[in-house]
Length: 405
Image (cartoon, rainbow, N blue to C red):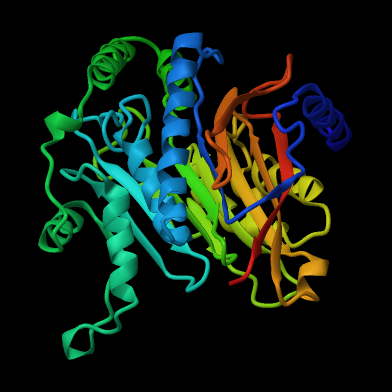
């Protein structure tokens, strides 16, 4: 679609949904915005499965807000949200992750602190129930300075080394069979049969299987948070593509690809937090998380995200030849309100949060510390739009204010 058609399409989509009706209001203390990203080959989610995704979002929001209400900061809250999402058997992260070609679970995860700009990540990690905990611990260890003999502490570990490091730092091991669900196992057996059949027929069937498989099971999870002090954080976790080659590491673990968080270093700039999901290879080659963060410094956030998704992702020169570019982002940006800058008693943040996706659908949820429960929504491409070639974009604005002690 042309840029004009995309704009018209997305304006229509925004007008159609009333998800954020009345969102422009004063909120206190903090806000959490998180998502589960999902896409199916048929482009349709049954009501029963959609309900489970929404419930997972709500539970994650609640867990993170509980941490914020207890005085925790953005990094702690985003970790709490990811743990809840990883523990859900309906997401492709932690428990219930897709099985690789060998029938094993290998997870990727990363986390970034906007205040310190520190980052931690794990890739192709087996035997650990919550990969985000290992990423979080790696981030913490880098803040302690150099190791013995002047060695630089690692921020990104993969495979067996990551598992051994996690266990040596007090994170308990978990047998892979306990992380495998009936759903993930049945999916593996079904895909295995498809592959065996494809090997006996023409190459066209092989390509068809890959296309169907790549558009399915992309329900990676992620979260972005801003706390009462204006600090932002982002995290992402994924079990990767179904039937992936052992050792494959997706965008969820790569710097600038899976998530990005950066506090504003100047009053004229925005603090930003981004989390991505979709086809890992597409997101790695475009570094979409960092690209979207950079784009959020523009005056019009909606237009900036639209252009970033179109020019830096769908039409990216790094993806030339790809006719089905699958991915999605959640983005949060905030700045100090003008009147707050002149007041010594009130600290107010203007927060904008948006999401965009080229997949059939995306499940999102958000919650503030003032809310009694989270709100959730499943965003879908407009009728007639082609997944991988078109995009949807939505979002909202709110003001966060706290009276200083």
